[in-house]
Length: 165
Image (cartoon, rainbow, N blue to C red; front, side, top):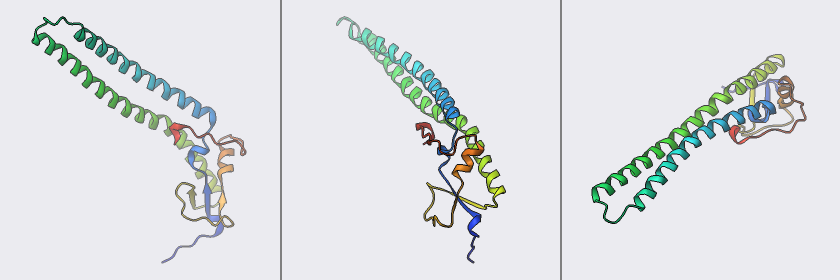
């Protein structure tokens, strides 16, 4: 069975990040930078402590017992493990924060696309990052309408941030 669509029932839209409102992207980026700064502050504090311990170890007199040197080495190794765990936590936390911050914007774009599709009787929308073939004479590009629905000038330059890619 082959399904065909009337020309007005198939539409094209730019990738979602190209339609996101610039002020809202800026807010998300600022929030993510704060989350990253918080993680980096904690990582740096561990690094400072580890550097201090390494400095202490290097300044121990040669007459220091092997037990004391071993304890200092163990403290440094523990700090290295904490640092590795903190790097992993930071990466996972930043990913989670990005998802949480971007979800409301994605929901807003999705709602705008659905509203336009219902108004124009469009049943399928392709995005440029997942289309194999487009007959541009038969496809309706709703990117400008989505931008208008979101209150963005249709001719506004897309904002592509690192967090949206």
